Length: 261
Length: 254
Image 1: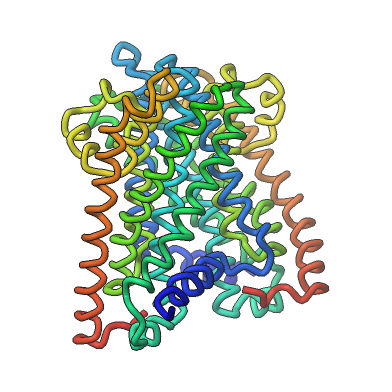
Image 2: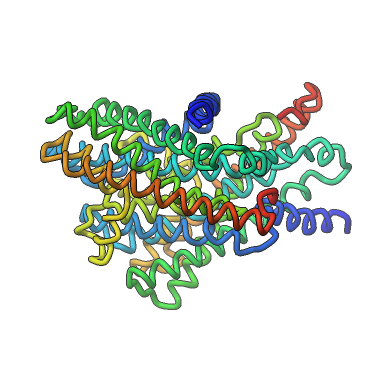
């Protein structure tokens, strides 16, 4: 019972603190306007370059929206504790670490999904793309898996906040690199071999390919191997993130660095 | 006032040079945007286009630095409880904000250097500047015009508690409407007149024409005129928004 309370209440409270909410409308510029204009920017850039269809960039940047919320949201949900000087208190509590940190991951996944869904819907409406209802349902499944994978990577990045000060630096650099490496905005055929190799080990890559295949008419069964890879990558980052949290908590206690800012 | 301005510049530049986030972000983002443009354009036969894309990416980063830098600084002031003190200081508030804008915009020069070097090293783009004198004058003209437009935007940040998220959201709309990487001809026609009012449009045109060929001087002149106009508007806006913020007692809300 306590495990569930820590999981749900802790997660929701942490999510609200993330945006310092008094009024939820304050989240609109970053969570709605930013991804929509990003989609439009790359759709028009793609049109002027004549490289790929509008759908290519719409799908790619919808998934990038999940990366931004997953990496920054999850990263800051942990790193914010140091900033607000609550990290030593949090880690002094006898609460299960799994409940504590997975509870912070769930709102991040939901947030990423909602942000991406809104961006996708508005982006598609603005640029005039329509998909069949069945495709939308299947896209939602792929999006959810990618949200999980990104949040898992965000957990690994956030764990650095227990040891160091600037998580934003990593989240910013990685989410920026994903614009290219994940294939969101550049067709893989145009990327150098080294970037294509890196892309196979990061979240989003397989999700984006799967989503593009779905919009091209493939069935969910056809993209299952891609979904499986995306899920596996998410699980690996989750395990690595939890291990890093445990290691850095131990190191932070040993060196007395938990309240250093 | 001059001392307040110079001290503000010194403090802001010192802060940015000590911020690993600013330094790394300025290294990575211009490379990312320029690389996307290079990969998409794939115009090895037309190096002019790639050089223009480099300059477009650099101007994008200048604008991003101004809106993110200024909104982030105002957010930090709120959190540290110094925003009220700044507003209450016996110098016009524009003197406090202007150094932040000018130094963040000038920091974009680092982005320009990074982009040009990356284009040369990574993609073999020739760095032949057609009009060096115009290029040397276009850059500060662009920096000042973008900083002055940033002042208008920052005046609204004084009123808004979530300035940073607003600052983040203001990047792409201005990049799009200014025709930096996406040519205005590829955008809806009504955006053309909007672009006339945006400093990055003229700053980009000035630097691009000086670099790849064309008459840069009219764009440089527009940058200068726009800077004066922006500062005049910003002074009025700041007075109004500062008054509103005092009236609502919202300066301390973090």
